[in-house]
Length: 292
Image (cartoon, rainbow, N blue to C red; front, side, top):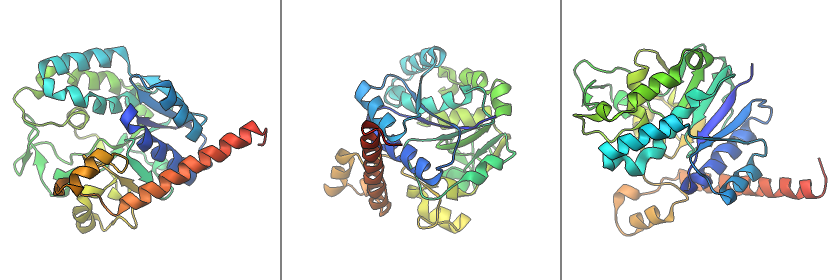
């Protein structure tokens, strides 16, 4: 039974998806699984650009039931309206017929092979979030950080390795039940898919090393806790409001807003982006010339 790599993309995240897909292909040239992009209406030029990078790519529209639930959620909580795309990660649990479904956000850079992950027996393999990194928990009702009892070993939603067991047991339908306005009633959190995943699969998650999801904004904490740094991590994750390809956010930093300061790894991302585009161009020329 094959495995697959899934990512989710919107129009603004197409450059990120180029690097996510392109660097995975470069580090895993013999991967024989499927490549899937979840979306809710990518334009034809965006689709063509991604296919240039990964010709075997398959595109999956967000399922109608999730779309309906997201509409109800944004109607009840309008502040979620600009962030509904973050829930598209849940679609990874809908992928049938795979031994393992590997999901990554479309703002990561693969720096080394991660083949060993596919041998994990875990039902759900993921990496701890910032609260777990500090040794805290999250309150069940409010999802706020707490030192008291609550959700333990909370994890981020940017990296998920899903075993066929969770898919076959109806993990997707279970997640959809949590995508409802009442889930956020009485909370002040802005967390989206992460909250749903942590509540739905509480106690079933296995936490992996942060080398597989090195969130650059948490670099110092990860180094202290896990002994991994940006130079040795296998996967760099550009989580947060600053993306290497988003010039508007970078301009906010140059205007004096320290919250939007880029990291040194931005240079690595741009080098990878250029390499991915160059490889796609060479492949395109070879196809036109009829070369293998």
